[in-house]
Image (cartoon, rainbow, N blue to C red; front, side, top):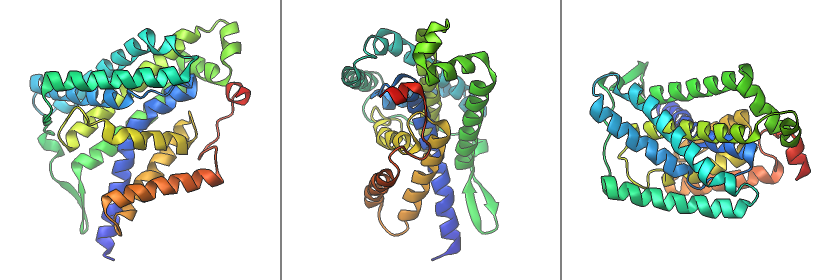
Length: 297
């Protein structure tokens, strides 16, 4: 096996893991706090991709992609807040109804994207400063992939600092540990739920910008990643940011390295088998989250 090729596959595994982190983190936040499965999460990724396309049309040039990330974060976050207030909050006590309702929202968003942009897809061109590759000996590391990894690291670091150091983060951790007690002590649990759902949607919007850099934006672009995002959340330990990050790296590396020996489709099958086998030996996932809410279940 060529050593350069192997290192390239490992690098691809980390870059794919960065995409999975951005796609799955919103699911991990909302499910960990609210125990809600959002089937429209892939379409929020898609909305972020289309917002990137529209932003770069109005803000061309080297900073267009940065502006696109800001717009996608805000736009997707607002969409998440509207979805939470109008639909999710009404069905929180009925998980199956929430799943079906958000699946219906995903179909509506897909059809809306087809009506507005067409079914063939649009392209987002990365700025010139992301062209080319960083050379490390005989190894070529694409600048766009390095940028995606940097974005994932910055998003993770920003979320960790926000949840650890701010008062809002303290309230989120309190609700996550014991919702009833936090409410009894004066925490507005509804506002915390809405904020976290919107924050997770905003992170997904940034993930959509990343996806737009890698290929055409179509109404179904989010569906290509949402199943793997759910696998990452389950493997990581429901609601754990650290576990989600570790699980994304595990799945990204496993898929990239398995593609050395098999094709992409069979690599996805092997990845699913890997997750199933892992959960047989560790059902709680990579990191087990302990809280009174989970203990009550």
